[in-house]
Image (cartoon, rainbow, N blue to C red; front, side, top):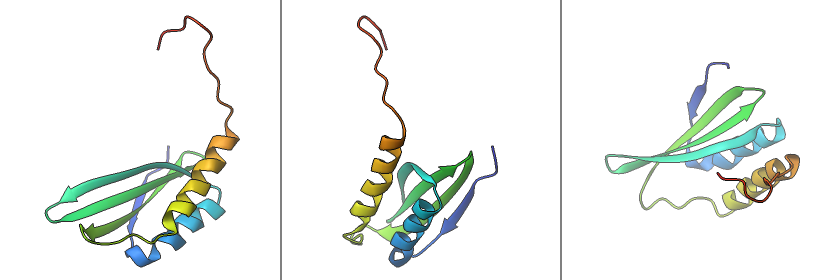
Length: 95
């Protein structure tokens, strides 16, 4: 596995950053949020061929996210979901 990189960006550049990863064939791995004092760090993690890239925004609690971010993230999720067949274990299988 390659070294991970994290790039901090402004919230106004978030859509462009997410779309860049989508267009380059990365998959969304995780979105995480951590409270740091009065601010929130939101990390978006992407993977392509075991190469991880992260983008981070730091916002206050009253910052509004771009309305169309949800659409972009849903497209990434749908692409990933459709690319992998879902296999369910047979009856009697314990998780």
